[in-house]
Length: 309
Image (cartoon, rainbow, N blue to C red; front, side, top):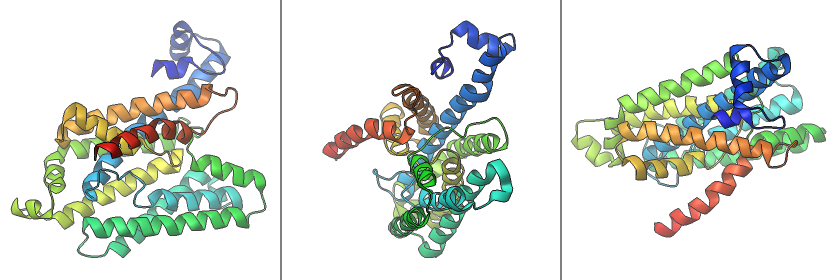
């Protein structure tokens, strides 16, 4: 985590970082640490932890080891909102928060659509099919907005955002919201871990334990939708974190969700901070979309996972 603050286009020593944190550094160093790198590292850690937790929950909800946070198409809804803000000025009255607000509104709209399509008697298969359908439809809507716009620079910005970036990291309300949502999600996952253990064993086992799998699935889905919506609104669609981290965590901590949740969150935080560091430095001063780095790491892991299935 400290390396994320030290390394960049301007290299900082540990002493300089400490001086910036304590307020004794020069104005430029303080600005680099407090306004650029520190909020970026914090957002990366929060987003990595949140995406990994969302992936863990989704693999339980749809009972599929290849599920990730975006299998429900929530990110596609956020993409529609973000594209509307970047290309057509949607939510311009919100000023600096127009992009995040529009993306979050799109994520909530996608979530509501998924609930409507899944309907009553929400099974894992029905939920998965509804999510895939919503995801494809909203991805098509995003592509239509890009082609309908006459702004080449706006289209480039949308594509960069779709691949993920921590460039919106700033101390303020949106970062605080992300922190509250991720910490709440972690606490809830740890508290209700035994219920997730039961749900992962199947609906028949859940019924036998006196629990209602449909109700549990709906409650967990609400949490996942809020978590993914808040994260995607801030960092875009960063792939593979929610897919690969839960599998690594299970190897480290087993399948008990109360114990597994904290390991999943920590590994996700470390992975995304390191990936962002690579995205900022590999082609410096140009920044790569962070989704490219996570895909380069995640794709080989996925191939290994497929061979073991």
